[in-house]
Amino acid sequence: MKNTTKKTKKHQPSDKTSWAYWMQAIEPSSQAINEAFPGYHPQWVQLSQCFTVSPENFKHMRTMLRMTPKQCAAYMRVSLRTLDRWENGDTQIPFIAFELLRLVLESMRFKFTHADWDGWFVSETGNLMSPDVGGEGFSPGQLNVLSFQRGEAPELRIENARLQALLDEAQAENTKLRQMYVAQGVVDELAAMQDTIIGLMSRIATARIIPFSPATEQLKEKTA
Image (cartoon, rainbow, N blue to C red; front, top):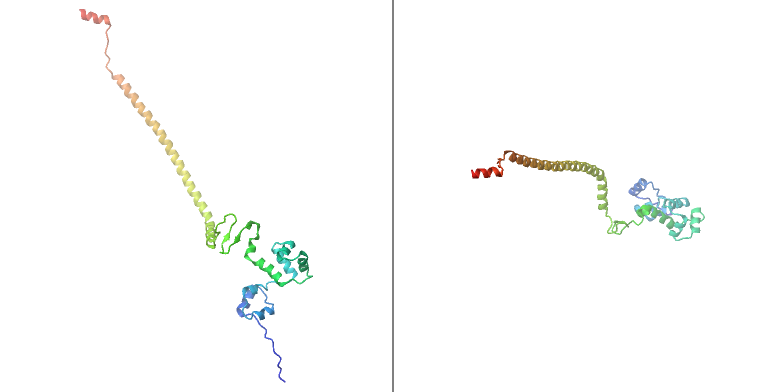
């Protein structure tokens, strides 16, 4: 008798998807996903299988996010008692809660949770917004320029130091020349004064001296 039992086809990821799984060290262990996504698995589906839903992995992700149980419970909109039961293994963790924590951990916005990034965020236009600068923020191109300028900064500092040394040398030379000019002016003035004095002395030395007789002698000459 012919066996009419229908065999269930076992779905598998495509070769390219399998390669992507292998490169990311992810084990595509969910047969339900393989059936729902035959062949090609989108990236977000692949990443959803990074961790097995377990209390240990859930707590590990919460710790990586630097969230206290109270903070995590508030974020998940559940009671702290419910969160404790999840992490203690008393209650099965809903996949949606587990996946939400994973998505937050792997999101780019999580990288801005450091205190130094307080107030920073990525706008809808893709610009990095700063609470200290405001405006339109920084585009990727502007950040590339800043990165390039930061790489040039050491060379620019060296060049600036070299130019400053040349400027200092030029200023010192200029000061010296100014001092010499002032000193030369005094010398010229003294030389002019000396020439004047010499001229006066020469005139005095060569002046004609007219002798004057006493008045009585002049009268005698006139009456003689």
